[in-house]
Amino acid sequence: MEFREQKVVANVSSIGLDSTEDESTFRIPFLPVLNNFCGRRMYFDSTKIRVETGGIGIIASVTKNHLNLRSVSKRELIIEMFKAFGMKADVSAPGRIASRLISQMRGIQGCRVFKIPGVRDLLEAYGPQASFERTSAIQKIGRSDPLTGVPNFSEYEGLFIEPRESGPLKPEHVLTFLLKRGVFQVGLAFGCPHCELDPWIPLDDVATEVRCEYCGKIFLTTPQLRDRNWKYRRSGLFGRDNNQEGSIPVVLTLQQLDNVLSWENLFLTNMTVEPITAQIESCETDFVLLHQSYWGDTVSIAIGECKTRNEISDDDVRKLGLVADVFENNGVDAFIVFSKLAPFTTDEITRCGRAQSQYRMRVIMLTDRELEPYFVYERTEKEFMIRSSAVSLEDLADSTDSIYFHPKPRPKPAS
Image (cartoon, rainbow, N blue to C red; front, side, top):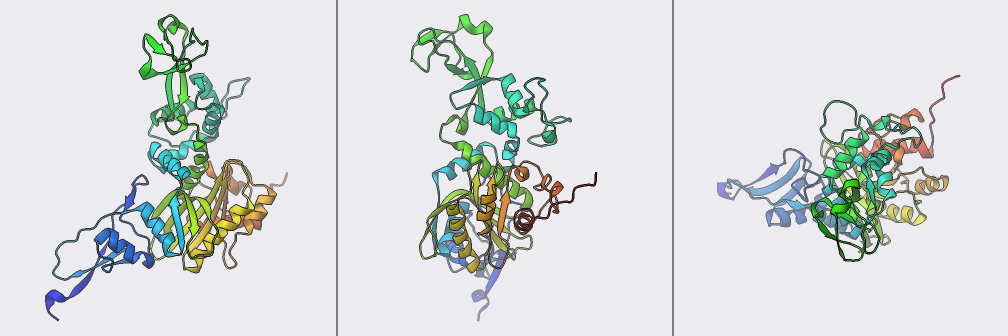
């Protein structure tokens, strides 16, 4: 064989992690079933790319002195993976809302502000058309005592949400952060002399004369300015009345999983899944997360159902269990995550236990007790014989077993 006809395999690996806000990636999980797809999308030749543990291998002529690669859409990559295993998947409307929320907060770690229960209380207390004053917002965020006004916020004083001067995090810092991220908008509420309602006017639109949002008539604002306080209203995604608050348990779960795994994660929010050839039922999953081990030789997938307070149903458990079975039967370690911002009931624990694999523990259960602290089991390890932290999906599944299915309560100190 002549020299110019010889072939080599060039291994290409990207340096540094992709941003969670990026919609495309060069990091391909070690799933050889994706070879043809990656060849078509990244190199325009389905026969010349091989997925490897340390990146991707490109089959090229020994005389070639440069290679051109194109990044691949994370969405298309995950959808193709489902397709390769006989399932049709796509991002749902709630998934697009959750994705936009993550983008609005500038990444999944920006969503850690929702760990603070007072922030969630504030969003629930005021609808998209309701306005409130700064003092009320700070009291709600701090869960202040209604009689003494003392905030119940000490547990979150060490939470990092953005760079700040030395000192503990305070409720007013949190409100400022939410304003910067466009969760709330400032304005003024005036009394309309025509319809006698109180239209709220954004700061940018305040003028000598304004139009009432309720009756459409113009009125003069200057007589009312001296006794007006700034009022706040939900804005951005939260300014829409489309149940976007349902995204909060999803982003909190993903944020905590990102803390735990901290390496090689790809995720999509809220996907519909339908059978092509796989033995599953049509269903939805609140997220899909792909994780590759540090050494690159193992790929795991986590699919999840995330609730605020509603119960995990039998349908949720059965349908996600069937999807997980498909991945496991094809050599991918699958985990099922059930999360809530409230405790699980006894019936829910029993239901979730049915999703365990015959051969391994794969169910992960998380509540606000695990989602609010920085370290996932920081609070829980005070009640059960487990570690306060975890570094893998396996760790989370093992701890779930020790908390719910074969409880190992920590002995109470002798009085």
